Amino acid sequence: MDSVAVPTMDKVGDAAWFRKFTTVLAVFIIACFALNALLGRASYSYTLIWPHVHGLVMVSWLALHVFQARHAAGGDLARHRKLGWIGAYLAVAVVGTMSFSGVAALRGGYVPPFFTPAYFLALTQVGAVVFGGLVFAAITRRSETDYHRRLMTGALIGLTNPALGRLLPMPLIVPWGGWLTLAIQLGLVGVMALHDRRTMGRIHPSTATVGGILAMTEVLVSLAATNRMVQELAASIAGG
Image (cartoon, rainbow, N blue to C red; front, side, top):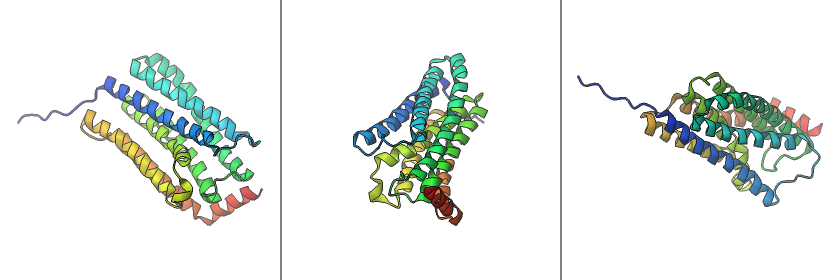
């Protein structure tokens, strides 16, 4: 019986594709925030410190992530590994500042009017945990580059949530804005899945995992927003 050939991954081509995909995602995220500012939808005059710190940390992480993808695609793995630990510390800072920014905005009355306080609290806190969890998972699989780069890209796709929140006409699509954002994120995961099918003949397990985690994130946020304890906590923070 003739054996059936199983497609194998072109590691160089895989790294090059993720370099391009990562760059596009990072530029898209920054462009959404920049457009929001240019249209006068963002106020930078308020005295809250955490959103400003979070923005600086986030841009730093995005820039390093793009450079890391370039190092991996270029074969400079020594520098990739060295800078990887800086990226890990920055990721911890992203999680912390994202969480603190959400609480600070809620306390200062800067919650977007199309979000309830409970939904905003759940969105920022669950989003921070999911981002941190995906980055942590990627670090634990760093010796398996196919898993590592897909989990890291999944964390990056998760960051498109606040970017899309500034791009989409959220006041006009309430209460479906979160689900539309999820659909776009799953579309990005689908692009990654198509790459998997083209290069390996199957969807990589970590790609499917990322899609499942992003879907469960929106489900969890939506459920948490209707939970009485979360609603009371959000009201307490907003009033306090």
